[in-house]
Length: 167
Image 1 (cartoon, rainbow, N blue to C red):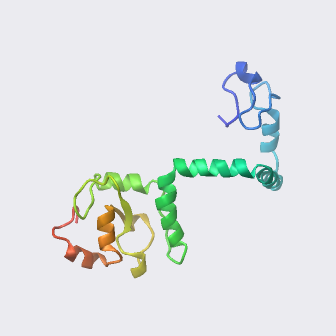
Image 2: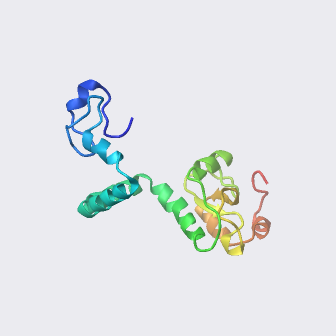
Image 3: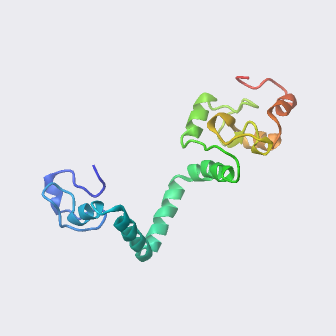
């Protein structure tokens, strides 16, 4: 159900959660929001621009709240994608951390310790021509990642005391 719409007919007198209007259709949605959804793309962009100008602080507060709630996504994935825009092709998917955690069984592939804190590491470093894609990343403990640095994977494996898990 669209945000701002009501769940049942008894809620038609409640104000809209988007625009606080109580002017509603009998089916539930408020009239101003329904009219706004029906606008053309050009007029919708104009409406959004005007809303942003009038509500800049509200917008910034929402952005900050969203970034705090999704701190991991912004800090790790977006930073890697930003680095990738500097000339490296590829883009990491949003659920890469969860998939890698499951694939690696929550363990660092270098030292076999629990990944309570982790870095996303490019297996083939970007500086050596690696791509910013899901298949080229792994989760490492921060100390393992900092030791690895921008080493070639073969050189890194030679420095390890033991054979890494799965390889």
